[in-house]
Length: 65
Image 1 (spheres, rainbow, N blue to C red):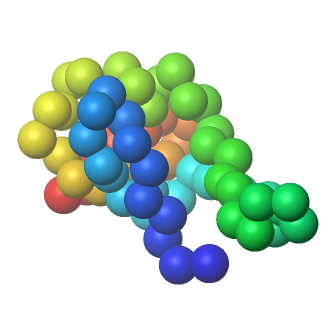
Image 2 (image 1 turned 180 degrees about the vertical axis):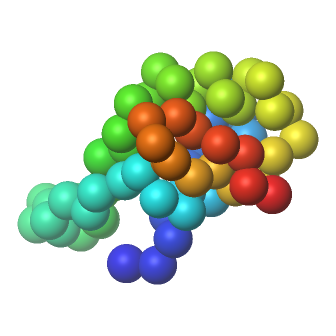
Image 3 (image 1 turned 180 degrees about the horizontal axis):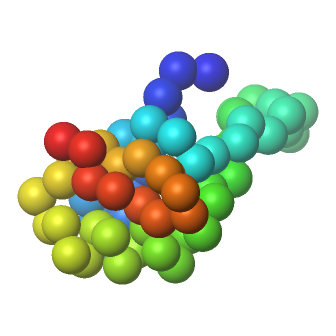
């Protein structure tokens, strides 16, 4: 899977790291992503409202772009 795009606080952002792919669900025919420390990601998105990409480094989410 390429870099996933998810919606955080109403904005679409790209995750550079800090996620795991989940097997494709046969019923919905969609792939899923599990995000590490989702609450920390929400806080990082709140602190950096203009960021479009985030990476998970040393246990913290960092705005990358």
